[in-house]
Length: 362
Image (cartoon, rainbow, N blue to C red; front, side):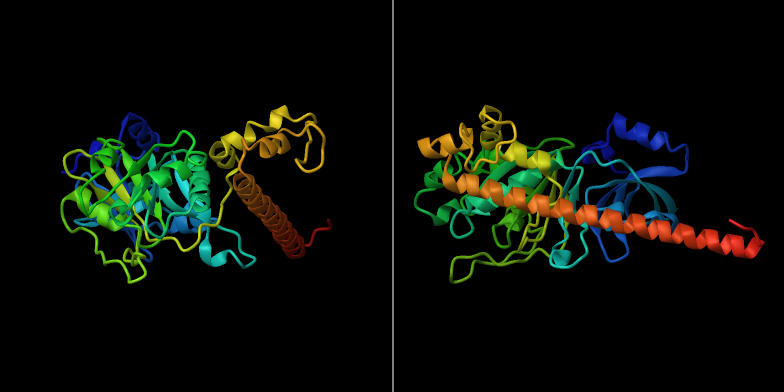
């Protein structure tokens, strides 16, 4: 038997399951997503499950299907098998614009990890370190509803890790930053200090920054395949799927994820405001409520830039991310309008067929 409380099950989740009113159903948590199937931990052990046909019919987008970290209601079908009947409400979700659809007319959410309490933004100090990319991760981390934490790995490969902390001073506002070296075993206590019984964290970052190596160090075994760094100092991509891993000794859970070559923003207006709190806090001080922060007199942003209180690259990064979100909103509005027209056409077609069949005038 598996103690589901170790996986994060609590009284609130139990009520959600009870409210379904079906005593045949048991709880389960998605650990791995396969093509058309899922590995799920349930009280009786691990099961290989598929969603029931009703869930397939009702799904409007890929976000309506279970993702790694999701809690689901299962109906047992025998030893090692089961059917996913319901998806329980998500408390948090780290999402991005589906990477392979970013340049097409299809605008769709991809849920990278669900029901996480902590988002570990992982970046290596030797080659991958980029404050602008970290701002992008923090924007989506704040939007997810989880608590962001920055992990700076491979500190043994740089002479002065403190320089990175200085560079992040105006980026990681209110966000813990931990410097690690899994080779030397330093900084691991800081990571486990962010976890605990039933706490789930997602490891997110580019390829080769040491996420799988960190998992192995925390598990105390070679759980995830790793490769050495390349001749140019960059890490090698090894993780090919998202996986929920239970750490030993009630230490918590980790979701290891493949490295992201790109991180396209999903809906994240609130996340942007959280990640750029220093910028957003200037807007109310502008003379005009509709200040465009360009040529208007009494602009608090312009004054902060002129005085050096706001770095130009920080402001430019905010504008770039805000522009991406505005473009995404226009695409979503366009899609919603298109879907509405399609629904109207389908309804009109059904009405015409009905009147034709029954010989009635409209």
